Each structure stands twice: as C-alpha cells, then as structure tokens.
Length: 431
Image (cartoon, rainbow, N blue to C red; front, top):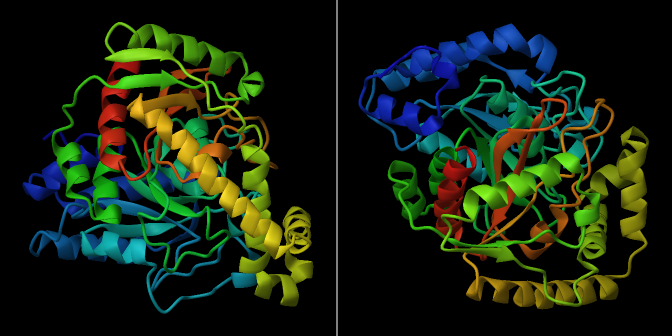
C-alpha cells in the first residue's frame, strides 16, 4: 500500500495494511507523532501525551501476533475515560495528576483489539460547557466544539486516525460537525460506560471519531461487540435507503450555511435514494429540548455530588449554575420526565416503520469564532434524549471555509443499518 502521509489515511485502510503486514505500527505511530509535534502547539488537542510508551507498544505489536481489528491503530482517548498508566483529569484542575488504577471498559476493549493509546485528548470541564484550550484545526480562532474537543480536532488535523468521545447533549456530533470529521454516537446503552466520569445516567453515550463511515464502523464493532459493523467496515456495499428529511422544530436556528447544505443534500440524494421526502416529528413533542436539559441538570447535580459538596469554589460558574438548578428539582418530577421520555421515544420510533433513516441538521452552521464557548447543541439534544444512534457526515464548506455537514439518525439498536445507510449517503454527498 502507499505509505505516503500515513497519518492522513483512513483507519480502515490502515487496519488492512497492518493486518497484511504491509505497514508497521511503529511507522504509523511515528507519522502521527510527527504531525502532533508539528501542530500541537497551535491546536492543543491533547491533555497528555506519552510518545515513548506509545512507540514501544507499537513496536511490540510489530513483533508479535495480530491482536484484533484495531491492531496497531493509534487511538486518542477523551480525558473523561479512566486510563491505567496515563493521568485522567476529567477536564478539571480538581483531578490534576490523577492516575486511575484501571482502564475504562471502552479503553480496555480497544487495547484488547490492538489499538495503541497515543494520548489523552482535551475535554471540557467534566464534559459540560466550560472549554479547554483546543482550537479548531481549520481556523485556530474558532471553537472545535465540545465536549469531545481534542478528539475531534486530533482526527481532523491528521494527528490520529481514531478517537473516543462521549455525548450527553451534542458532544460527539457537534465537534464532528465543526471539525469536519465523521462522528458516531451509538444507540444509548449499547456501549459500556464503566470507568467514564458520569454526568447523566439517562443520556451519557460512548462513541467516537474517524475520517469515514467505515472508520467509525470499525471502531464501533469493537465498542459494541457487533460483527455486523466489522463486516460493514470491510465491505460497506448496501442498498439505497428510504430517507426522511427532518428539519426538526429548531430549523429556524439553522443559518444560511446549514440551509445550503440541506438543499445540496436533497439535490444529491433525491435521484438515487429508494425514497426521499420531508418528514416532521410527531405532534406534541415540542418540549423535548427542554426535557433533555432538565434530565441532564437533575442527574449531573447528583453525579457530581462529591465535587459539588467538597470543591464547589473550584468549579466553573456555568457548572455551578447547572448543579444548583438540578439540585432544586424534585425527584418525583424527574421520574415524570423519564416517563415522558419513554413515551416520546416510542412515538418517534414509529417513524422508522416508514423510513430507514432520518436526515437532520448537526449544528446551526460553521464553528463559531472564539475559544470561550463551544457552540450550541440544539440540533443534537432531542436525539440524545431519545437514545437514538447518530452519525455526522461532513461534505461541504460554509461562507468562511469551515466544514459543514448533516447527521443521520437511525432506529434504536439498529446501528448496523444506520452505518450502512450513512456510508451510502456520504458517498453521494461527497460526489
């Protein structure tokens, strides 16, 4: 295989070369680390790097048996995941230098499959909105999004082929949109969250980033333990899907760039899709954005009880406000909200009797200017609340030259069907 610019190749291509021994894991790791050395001083994607250990682990893989589907692939791990041998700070000075005794389940699974953890990527404070130092690699004066800021930026800038992230509101899809990479949020509950700092039991979802749908299918096959995703990464041929184009009730917040991407997608997909038409969410679901915020506030206030009780003065003002709001909510009201969520999930689920996937906005537009905020997850909150699998597909640019794309949403538990449709759609959006 062509080994020029190894750090820019898709993960699935690299995996094939590594499996055939046409490519050495050490050479790939060096190419990625060279890119990190070139750009990290500007992008600030990493909370911690250990190049010597990463190279030693890659070298050991070259001298041993094939480990699994991720054999020799450099992996970035969001600093919300516990990692044995590497510090885990959860994006907060409270945990500076903290070294967990064990890997989070997702990290352990990836290592078992042969991935080499290259470093810990920057997260916002406890995966909420207070940003870290990461900049958007396409324009250093713009946000990369959050909370999986470093993971999205590292993949976008050619530092890594794959990275882990989490989503509680829009923390995979939004940074994928802003940085122009493929982001995959699996169906809620299909990936273990053991060893990941919790915000919301009802919402937290482990997923990741790659440069193609085949990349995230490869990563997902390990995280979900689903051989159908591995088959898709190897041979993504699939049938034309039935696509429902769902602007969502928040469409008024989509700017001209997102609207242009929407129109371009309709033109590209309409001639070839099995069926394509505009579709609205069922009536009576106008409260889902607020419902997601309330569920998140209640559960975060309790998940971060230790930090709230013992270190309140060292938390950001925005996080303290969220914790106060959540603590003031009654448990009975939270239970009622969970019932409301289940009803809404059933109602929206019925759409997938008619459509294979829904196409929807990922973000309001290009990544906003400035590094003091991470953008608005308004177009992600509903799908996260409902626990539906989502994939962001980058395919165009906005007025400032920054990436713009759209997301596909699938039926809960049918991640393989979503990713198959996503590959089909992405190929046609890219032309």
